[in-house]
Image 1 (spheres, one colour):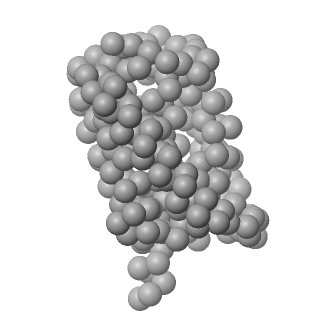
Image 2: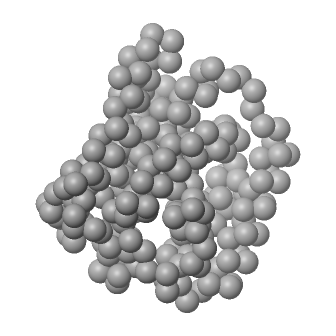
Length: 226
């Protein structure tokens, strides 16, 4: 099915867009805070995406894409870095409205410390695997910044939103990797899969969403101060 990846992108963003106009959450009013951070984050991740595609870290099944490409990347892959962050920030905004409880600061710090230790161990073990190195290297830098260098008030709620986002993550990435639309070179990752999904994908997604939420909060606070 030529439009499979395009259809997945469409379904990923459909309900978040429609529900953005709910009077309680009113997510559409926050759209203007999303685009700048999404553009910055998207450029960073698309750079790696192009490099990974050229290096054969992953590639795309031509049977399930339209064939429209920019810099070696299918149009659908570029849209992925818009549809997924938008949908996950929507989850984050909904949780902020409906769930008033936040994880204790001590729990957030403990979780961040655990993730930092995990990143360091895996970087030492798999330093010769490109996907593993970039994923855990980037996540390590981000957590060090938002937890230990410039502690961010939103980090605990981000972890909550990320946990919820794993539900659509398994659906979307499960489809992408089981059909398969995206294929991976196991010589460039740990070759550990959760079902059909490489383990790195979970943390690559965390880094992608952490950057987007961070920029979302930054631009929202800057606008509110002006």
